[in-house]
Image 1: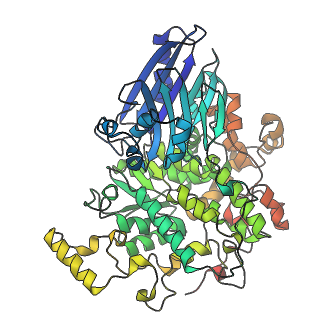
Image 2: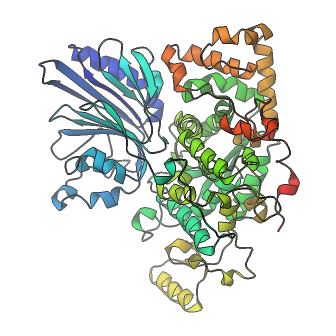
Length: 631
């Protein structure tokens, strides 16, 4: 990821002054791209004879092409200019769509350069649907003056736009702090959309069949078949593998919960060989580093340590105190640009951890965000009345990810120039999960499905077989002849350790993904799992900071998205101090919630209606030890 900033179609005739303004504002997101800054200034006269200027700025975080991947990026003529934030995982496949003579003229190994060349052979609204990755980008066509802007389907990357106070120019930025002083309106650029300055319309390009809440897969089957489990397992393995594409030191965020532990396990499987070569070459960084953070008594730290020991990662465990967390909350809010309670609670330890990770020379980490929304992993989903209610809530949650977990993962880590990649939000894998029959996702008391995300757990559970050799899963079984042949090949290649070849590359070694106690560990929200005293201390601090009278008059002080607790009031005060532009308050999604639910799900249970706590522990009678499946 990087930071991008653009001023599009300005009528300011003093281009030199406008450039200085652009550089000043663009430097506010230098933390997103500390490796280099690039700029392109374009002046032209429109069809009405008005002189206009467009300025593109890129703050570069070099991950794929460290040496030559500087941005902006250009096509062969230099007339198509691209600034991009994110990663295009299928860039090599897309490159093959280009004429051979164009392929030979690529100037960099950047995964985003292909965007500039694709623009010359098809309209951007055609190729944007072909992009597999996380991205926000601006394309400038100097032949016409037109700009094309797009954001990835779910909103993994952050992107904002505004209208200038001085003219009708459009301003684009990875973070809204660049738009505060000089824009009259600031909004989030909607995920899954593109915008053309020619048509001046936002167009949704991402609309899978499940996007319509009423489209649900039904089945008469009562049990989950092996083919479906295999599809889930192989789908996640491919999603993790493609996100290991990088040429810098990387790691994995390991909380010790199911999601991050599965990502870590699969990452260890493929780490020895370079994924961008199809496993034909050894990886530059073959050992996985895992990172965890929490209070001293954190339940996450103990489980993360257990997983790291099981998988053999180089594990780094960090601690913070509640007071250290409270001290950095003002900075956290400045960076993540929200006043949402749960997001701030969870972003704070992630913010502290990201600083530690960057200090160790790590630029990219994989993480486990997204599957709780898609599979109904939050504890309140236990109370879903029907499969229809369950499915509709998962769709609603995914549509809001850009306001919550994606925003947290992106901005907390990029505060220190660390990129987070999220395999569970892979487009193909997400389609697999969202087209599952909802009844296979639900918690069903009195059956095997008595824990959330059961189908994902079962897909990676080898313990149900008497022997690993009984498993129908292809990657696990290797014959003696294959072992002998592999050994000979490895000896010829001077490879001393054949077991370093991961199963996915043909080395079919029987293995267990995770300890059973982790594979069937119940959901802990990150803000809970880092240590339960964390939330208690924040609330105590807010009680001392905000008076009863202030809270009583909250509706007068904050008429838009009025806070209902002292904690929320404190966050809102810090937010308004950091972002005085009045339109900023509308960039935050705000609704009543219980344990991260939408307001609609509060109607599921009478006990939800009188609570206003986004902590997972607020769902009474669900988070108990007897719900953990015993082997």
